[in-house]
Image (cartoon, rainbow, N blue to C red; front, top):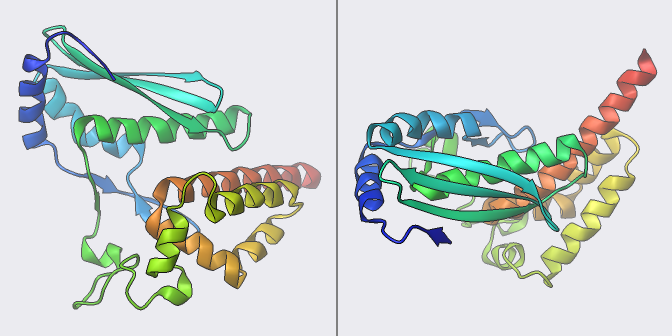
Length: 231
C-alpha cells in the first residue's frame, strides 16, 4: 500500500462518509445460478454522494501485467492526503472482452474494499433464500450432496497447489476446446462438475467468478460464430 505521509484528515473524512454510505444493491443476476450481485454502477451509486460531500474522491488506473491486468485504486482527500493500492486479476481470454471483464471485476472489488462497502440484496431475505428460519444457500447445513458441506468448503478454499486449483486449470482447458454452447451447458450440469461449481459459488467468490468469466467468454465466442454462420 502507498500512502501520503499524513492521513489524519483523510481518515476523519472517510469515517464520516462511511457513516452515510449504504450498501450497494445487488441488481445484476448471474445467469447460471440466478444469484444477484452489485455491479460497478451500483457501487458508484452507493458511494459517490457521501465521498464527494466529505471531500473524498477515487481514481482507478487499469493496466496490463504478467498475470493479466491490474487496477491501481487511489483514495484522495482535498487536503492532498491519499491511500493507494493495486489489485491484480487473471484474464480468461486475452482479447478486448477478456481484458474488459477482468478490469471491471478488479475495479468493482477494489472500490468496495477501499471504502468498506458491503453489497445488499435488492429484495432482502427472499433473494438470499432465507425464509421462515430456513438456512440460505451457502450455509453449509445439510448440503454436502450439492457442494456446500465442510469438506467442500475446504476443497474450494485450498491453496494454489490444491485439488481445486488443479481442477480449475483442467476446466479452463476443457472449456477452451468446446465447440458448442450446448457442450458447455451439458458439462456444467454433470453431477460432479455441478457440485464443484456450487462449492465455489458458496465458498470462494473470486474463483467462482473467474470460472464463470471463462465460461461466459467462451459462450459469447461460440454464439458469435453461430450468428456469423447464419448470416
